[in-house]
Image (cartoon, rainbow, N blue to C red; front, side, top):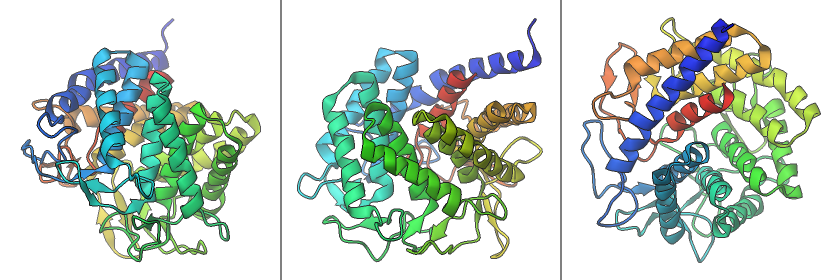
Length: 400
């Protein structure tokens, strides 16, 4: 007998495959490769115009590599492997700093260094992507580079005194005065966001390289989240900290909450430690419950707000919706409460009806709080990438 849960699961899996193979991945294959200069265009604006001379960000390139590597792992389509290999070659040939180590923050459209700073967030994404590429190809150069980046992060960024990781360095690995990941961020030495993606990267690296030091640092990152970053009072993630782990923000970021809820548990699972996973489970569920405060009646998740500062951003950003689906499915699997699965389905429905660009492919940046489509922000660019939405589809297929 087919149960309601079976029917929901089957429907979500079918829809996820359709979105991935008809609207997400084909867009990046057809629109992004720059045949003239190599690599990928740095930007396609919200009106579908390619900006051929736009800067090329490390984040976008790493996320393209990860997305097509992960898609090939599950679907084994040659065109996905071809895109992954193309991305890998461009990253190794252009983004790595052969003199000082690490990867540049950005290149110009001809592949020359534009901003040579070493933002730890982007080093982590390179580890994440190269580890996934090694997983599908056994390409030893990709593994060696991922391990090299891990060692550089531990050498330069890890705070041996107060724990955690500092944010950003110049080309020669001197700590910068301006540590911000973007203009909207606070200029603090430690952030939730960078720690989250180091956690994600080290989880991926551990799959291919179960090194003792890596295991120790991954366990430490789990501790940092459970005892320093998750707010004891409300279950949300605190976002910005000074070097002594004093919180410097009051913002609630609902997308990061729901994303962290499942990445944190995934990190415990990859360590193959049942006791640790059991200890992390209530933290994961508590953060997911806090994030659920941002779910609207239409199934969408708002972006962020800060009651103390009177700041509200209730737009429905593409990546927040993708992470909401995965986080809710994870919470359902941990709790057995079907409420979470229904929330995942409802959010997926919002994505399908509003966020997916049925004419041109890919997803819009966001649906504004008033319900209008945001065509001002990029369709592809420094931050707009195939990683969150392709990962959502792949996680649905893996988990259900």
